Amino acid sequence: MEIRKISAKETWDLRQKVMWPMKTIEYVKLKDDEQGIHYGGFIGNRLIAVVSLFYQDKQVQFRKFATCTEHQKQGYGTQLLQYILSEAKVVGTDTIWCHARADKANFYQRFGLKVMGESFKREGKNYLLMSKCLQTPEK
Image (cartoon, helix red, strand yellow):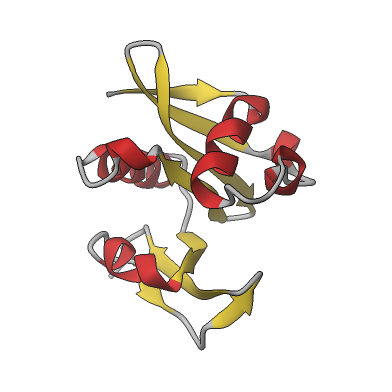
């Protein structure tokens, strides 16, 4: 899989199909999409995975992480997550975090993200705040 930066617009179809298939494209657009850095995972010319990063100070939030249903459980999401973890660390980010769907928490925990606080509901789905410290404290 090749990973490269893409536009916000290029993420919308996949976000909608994977995350909110019963909603419109408008629903998956973020008001701050233009401030994000968006990555796509490609097999040939086909976009099969997307994620969007939003930096603020020394923290970055990843949002709208989605992999085509037919390509899930084949390591593509793992590759994309490892890529953004590495990218965030290289630019000096202290913490990476997300609002993960509760049923995906085990996936994120494999990469060192930890649950922070209680779950919450949005649109009938349970979410957890998960985060990971990326910088090793100086001794």
